[in-house]
Figure 1 (tube, rainbow, N blue to C red):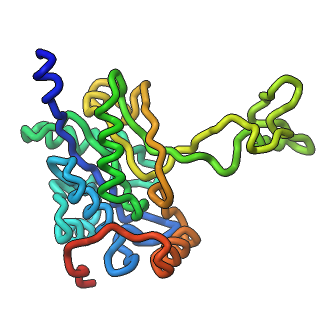
Figure 2: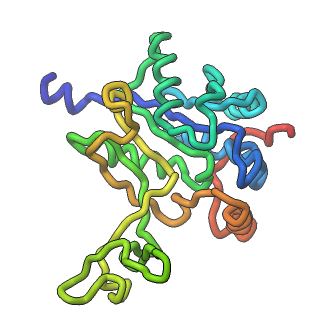
Length: 257
C-alpha cells in the first residue's frame, strides 16, 4: 500500500451492543425505561448517529429485547445461545460467536466496538472521539474507556484476621502511599463500561477482546457512568430529571410497552 493509499484507508467497524435479559441487580434493566425510552435505545441511537459503524448489532437471548432493538434501528442477526448468556459468561465468548457466525455469512469488519447499554450518557460525539483516538494510533490492539479513580488503590488494604496489609506496598522514599495525600499520589485510572474498540483480528487470532497493547480513552463528565445496581438507576433518573446530564437524542417515538 502506497503512502497516499494508506492515508486514504479507513477501517470498517461494527457496533456490538450486549443486552442479555438476565440482570439480577436491576431486573430487565436493558429494556427498562429511563426517561422516554428503554435504556437500550440510547446506546443504539448514539451508535447510529455517530456515523462510525457499517452495522449496529444487538446481542441478546430475548425475543422481547430483540424486537425493541429492531424498532430503534439495530440489527439482531441471531439470538445469543443460553450457554453464552449467563451471569459469568465472558464477553469474548459471545463476541467470538456473533462475529464468527457473521463471518461465515460473508459479513466482516476490520474493527468492532463494544457499547454497553448500561452507559446511557455516552453520546455520538463520545464514540467519534474514541474512534479518532483509536484510528490515530499505530501498533495498538484496542482502546478502552477509563476515568480517574476516586478511591486510590494506594489506600486500599487486605484484611487477614486481626491484621491488615496494603494492597500496593509502594511509596515515595520512606513515605508509603497509604499515608500520602491523594493529591500527591500517582494518577491512576479505572476502566468504565462506556466503550471499547478493538481490531477483530484480536478476537480470532488471540481469543481476547483487548490484546496486549491498549490505548486509553479518558471519558468526560457522565460519559462513563454505568448502571449496575438500583442506586445507580436512581442516580441516572435524578441526573435526567434535574437536567444535569442529557441523554442522547432518540429520533423514534417511544416504543409501545
